[in-house]
Image (cartoon, rainbow, N blue to C red; front, side):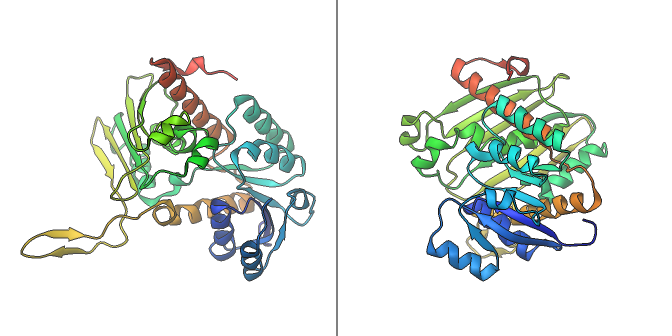
Length: 340
């Protein structure tokens, strides 16, 4: 794979599948998308596929059985991820899979076992690890610039809540939204916590509560050395997509604020202001989405293990499960309590 183009198949043509396909075609040198599979094919999807020059099919098996396709990007609904991981591994395909791997630990372990047995590359799409600001903070921790981390703060707030129909099948806030923050906490801390305490409320949309979920949460992760991480989530920040992290350590502190479309500030005799931050994840993390796929490509070409693998995907789900258990039972939950 070192010199030739790597041929991809994409499973799932929803919002994230569309994004990854566009990036593979336009922004990842050496990648070629041959086929995309989706169970719902309409005229708009056909036109898009024709414009980008790839084959559109309704059955993912056409991708898995195609000997020319070397790698797959699994962007379908979460309840199909483990199934396609297992089938792609058995077919000898290199695998990039969107988060989370699954909602069930047994299914995750079965998928990871298939990957290991087939000896294929496997990367989970935790794109925020590839954000330029967050990477800089993580590198400062690794270099010892901050000393020993004592407190990590992660803020993640969406600009508007998702449709109720989506909430019903999303797995809930901890699995759908906070899953990124659980992975970010592991990325920054370099370790799994030993205890999780979660509190949550319905403060944005009562309909979310009616389907059994929350829209506002604060989670505290505690590590074996006593260090802590706080994560705060909201489904609605009226001012935009609020994404910030802070790491406070024995030697100093690093803060990554929000990204803005520009750095211009306006001054008048009445006020000082600037434009609003990016509105949602497609704008805020576009660069990170591109970098994660470039990294996956580099791993395939150089025969390297991806930096975000199956264990990372498993650990994030374990934290989501611990948070849900803590919320339901109104108590701190030891990570050791979460078993497949």
